[in-house]
Image 1 (cartoon, rainbow, N blue to C red):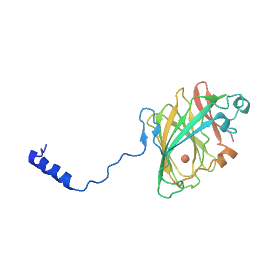
Image 2 (cartoon, protein in one colour):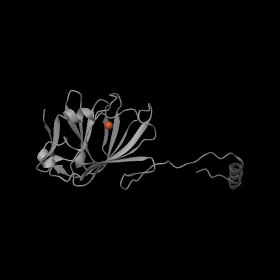
Image 3 (cartoon, helix red, strand yellow):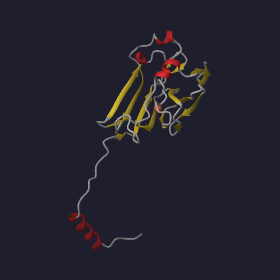
Image 4 (cartoon, rainbow, N blue to C red):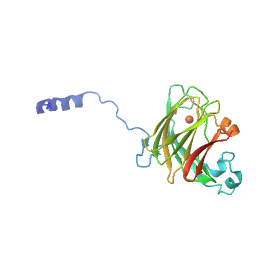
Length: 208
Ligand SMILES: [Fe+2]
């Protein structure tokens, strides 16, 4: 190992005092690794409750018996640039709470991106679940989500997360700031398959 002589260190200290000091700052946002929560003034928070999820689950009768104020999932996002900015990136985390509507697992609404060539990364952080994916021809499949699972979602693929475990499912995401979200198509036609609990096993069942 090369050791800097003590007289050289003295010279470096003198130089550091006479030279211009450039800015060293902290990032305005912190990702808490214990719970994967985002901390900072720029964070956008959103919670989806049962009352926000009408039309998503198959068993409507059971759905309307649930407490409308029951949270289904939360989203935190850091949007360092304006939505729609070309070349920028957004970062977010989703927490899907454990629960079911009859046999169907709690899940996110799901969406396509408005710009069909804007892809996204998902990262499984905590809990277990499924990333449900559907192409424009309505072919649906799923990828298992677990701590450390990494998912590349092609730009023209609809995506939603379902929690199949007993704990919170936490997933990180990074996507282009001009991707946009198209929730409407999924709210009108849904996915072509549903993820249901059959004897404690998650099964993806084709619907149409
Ligand atoms: Fe997305």
